[in-house]
Image (cartoon, rainbow, N blue to C red; front, top):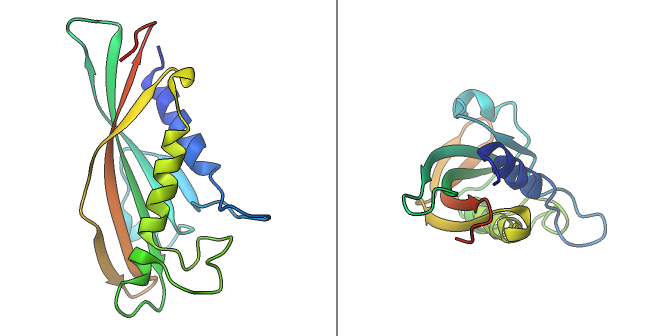
Length: 166
């Protein structure tokens, strides 16, 4: 059975190693951390954008199959785009100097696709099955230091068990 520690590590590795396609493609996320939460205001000035937080949430054991465990995770992705007058580029992405092999000029929804693709790589061979349960509305705000900041939270359920198939 994969523990919360193992599942969080698998998710972190999948996201931290995701790169934009193409020769010389850079890592998608500037920072990927497993945390109980951070002070977003203070963190904004210290982070390499975009960033991803993996927040372990509640765990449940199946009443009928005690070897089957459901572990929930909240994954938050956040991005900032300087000079985005309307807040559209931070959501949708836009033409810019880095939109080929880097995350610069990319939008939150482009990062979302990377998140989905990275999680899809995890499988029962890793001892876990992961499914998206919900996604929050996109939250965006104009920050004087970094420009438009957008973030979205995704809730996932991970099923794992000793010889059980969820």
